[in-house]
Amino acid sequence: MFEVFKSFSTELKFYLIMNVFFCFGGALSGVFQSVFLWKMDKTYSLLAYYSLYWSASIIISFVVCSWIARKTSPMITMRFGFLFYLFTYLIMLIFHNNLQDHIMLLGGTTGLAMSLYYVGVHMAVLDLTTNDKRDSFLYIQGVLNTVGGVAAPLLAGILISQFNGMIGYYVVFIATCVFFFIAFLISLKVKGSPISSQSYFWDVIKDPSREWKKMYSVMFADGIVSGVYWTFLVTMITFKVAGGELNLGVFNTAAEVVSILAFMMLAKFSNPDYRIRIFAIGSVGILLGSVLLSSFPVLISLIIYAVIQPVAGNMINTSMNAMIYASIERDPDYKNRRLDYIIIREIPLGIGRIIGVTLFLIMRKYLNSDNLLPISFSLFPIVYVLMIPTLYMVWKKPRRVMTAEK
Image 1: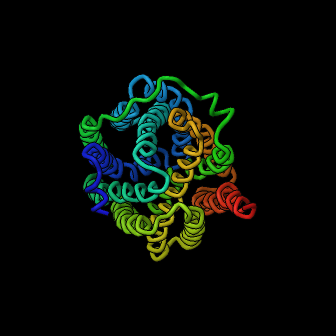
Image 2: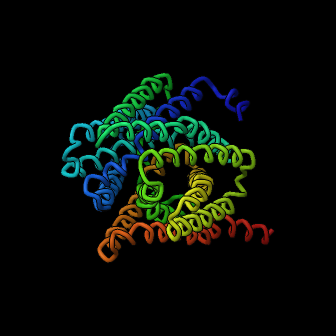
Image 3: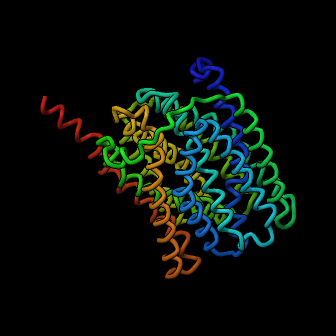
């Protein structure tokens, strides 16, 4: 893996280092942001509405972000993303006492920051890699990003536990702002490549690649899970079982270490032909781990989940992203259309997130607070398992039919 890193260009190395600092800053506060918001009202409504607002904001913001990327470059768009991420934490610091009254502002700004950042990320991955090497690149990038955040949750947990009330959270949020600003400064070393100013949005809507057209339902389903499960359910159930911020920090640091090992192992054996089976193993693993922790919320279950979740999560997310990138490259004119594919992707994904949060809010009406967390934590990963047959129909069955015809 280190030999591969050495072979990267200077610009690509700065790109990866930039993301290390960004991920370290995000890991400092990301885990505890959900706990911070939960403590505002001690229910899950504020968390759900925050997720709902940033999900809706992403759908709207990606159109604006694509326009900025065409007028400047995807790399400049990413730099704006760093600044707006920093601004989201400033909002929490400024309105800390009555943040619940400004949750729409926080969610809207977060969605804009995510849109700006991920336009740059997706375009960089498409431009810097090819389909046959993309899985390895994504796993190596995952290792470096995880290394950047491996000590951050533990450090944040220690800092928060050293102060009374919410002061520790403010200290951590300020530290996050510092690391985001450093990432922004390093990004100035990465020039990036400009793209065509012409939009092919409606052309992609009307005539995408065959695989992309069939991936809409998969991206929609992925949004249902990601808008709730990965956004706050994982953090809240581990916080409840672990019993405090310091223990939550220890859990997440341990999970990051496991994640590094998983990325290194998967990078070694990665192969485009294995994507569906890797996704399937990860989906079943995350479901079983979630059911175990929900049914038996004790320390041993948390330890088992800490081993399963990083490995299974990496298998799901990396395989999913690799398949989405591959479906974009199946378009003969993808070089000109790639940004439009990235923008359109957010429509089914964003709608899925909104549906997922809505389902959670409906469940909240009919379940008491003691049952809401474990039941929802067990139910949402089922969606991943249900996605497996669809992915098989998109990627494996057509290949087998073509082989049989030959």
